[in-house]
Image 1: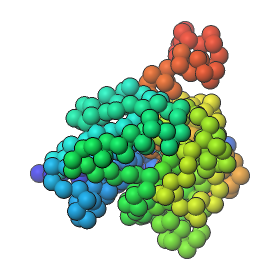
Image 2 (image 1 turned 90 degrees about the vertical axis):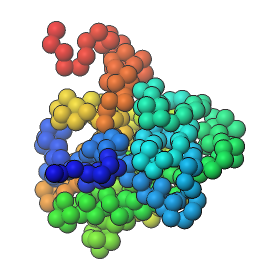
Image 3 (image 1 turned 135 degrees about the vertical axis):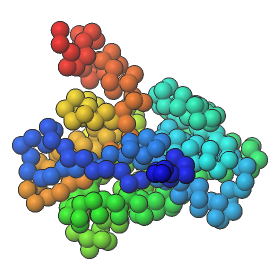
Image 4 (image 1 turned 180 degrees about the horizontal axis):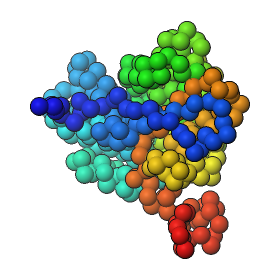
Length: 330
Ligand code: PMP
């Protein structure tokens, strides 16, 4: 018989998939690391597992404890799945820009969800950072993984994502491209790839226009899960060789093209990362192997990126496009 003990045992070992249509006319090989193959549906399963196991080992998380975390959804799913396996409760705090679909997923896993306004600074008492701090004080046996400061976040990528990419490309990777949220993915994966290649691999961050990583002040943008208005401890400033800023309009246009032309139904931050990878590929040659990480799937965004009315409302599609879907035969 061929089976695993628990769904959590399937975290990691995601495939690399070649991009074909989007890279037409470009010289490098561009490979997508498709993280929706993780059992919770995103790259965040990796950090959830490692953060929980480290907290158990250190005694911070005790049997029957409650995991409290500010999360835009994906980290929550990973934590909820791991918590289910190990018998913990979960309370998640989300900004209100996170889609209702994503919040309902967390509830389906048995978590409690608290929603906070997006348009307040992190130090504001209603910010999702402040509210989660308060809940940690109030709930007995609470433990906050704190994905923005927990070094197990980048470590999980140093020990899994990085080695996987190195092995899958047979050491031929020349560039790694990833969106930056907590910075865990780019810092951990990037550090591993630089060490393995003795500094040859270049690391490129993709960031929403307006976020601090690309020189902004944190002006609101619509792409979810990436960009920050502060510098988290999980972001290692010494890893990225370059940061490319991408507009919401471009992120969403590329996200739609990934589904239409590559059969990859993925989230908006994936379109952002691929947009950056394509800009990089335009200036690179045939010997280059660019790996771009796609953090999650697109089903959590059907009411947004993949909804014509929503897109037209923000001016990302012409106003008369609300009837037909892109690609419809009329
Ligand atoms: N995309 C999505 C959809 C995410 O949820 C996250 C995590 N916040 C990221 C990208 C960025 O990953 P990281 O936090 O490792 O920088």
